[in-house]
Image (cartoon, rainbow, N blue to C red; front, side, top):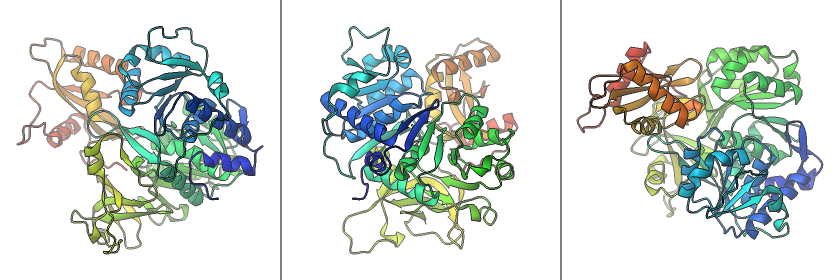
Length: 543
């Protein structure tokens, strides 16, 4: 039977090639048969603990075997996994636990030590699974603590709950334009269709070795697992400190496929690659933003035999478009066409399709369109909407609406159907491959009590895509010198936020921030002012 459930990607490959290597981490290998057995055992352990159908299992770990087993095991048990980025701070992880209502948390003793004090704010948490021995187990917590080996031995023969491809299997948290991160709900169908689609256009095969350099909490990072498992390939899990570590792994593991975000590619392009790397590196792929042309040209010169793929994606629909390597020179700047098993439309506000080269909103339909934002009907209604009949792709006699993802991104389509990114409608900051909510930074600054008001923005940056800049006014009666205030605010950000969210520039303004007629901060005027102060052109293009 065709694979329709996420965990069956592993089970199917284990049936075909049980001894093939599925995962490698720190030069230790795990074959498909052992991986499949561990996933089933962990699923049985979750069911034994009382995990109900659709309940959430949060995973806060770096890239390791246990991370993969816990995620796929939660899916096999009939629950949904919630991977938290290992770069997040405990307060942000606690938000994810509360918002998702996770009843199980899988983490390491070291991470738990920093998180323990905040777990009292997570009333839904019933079980804690630690990957090693903890020297500080809780004594008065509402949850029960279990060891990793205990989980695998609890009930390996217990089957998971019955689920179908339409059921949820994951919640991936991504920052919104306002507020704290929101959870994108993906089904088995979304993730399996995405895996098969990407594996098809990247021409993945069983002898591939894919390097998982991106966080597994990213859709593109987790996609390295699913595309590899779809064809029985090997994934090398890498937690790197420096770009050179990535290059060393590519060489030592003879990696055939590497996917990264622009800031990493920019750094990698500046390194000296070992001669003959492209004899085994079959392709390199970019996601998470626009790759500068100079970087692309440098990589192509370093890796003349490797095929470059430029991709655009939405967490809300898992994958969206790609530009085939043979089109790169003919269509510079294009984000390509829809991936297999998806359709991408360019629509006007009235729902009609745009004419060639007319700007419009990118709208995606098909098997990869997610289930919405977890427990957030308002934001779901804003982004996941019925496809207009005027779009011309559905018959008038169909009575049930089809839900599509309205991206909020403005694009144009040329006469040959290739798409070109123009800009974002929201105020998200795109830096180092991450989507950062301005409000999340602003809330940290407001909590200091040192400022009156503030607004965070992304300014154009040659390597990061955007750098984070903040305009603040001192709190009434504040007598702290501006340079001292900047230093204290920066320290607070470094204490409460991961490094990629720490502002690179904080400007103290003595006058009130500009307002629009509605009394809200006029972000457009303030953005232009920050650009002038920083000596940057205000016309930001982010792809």
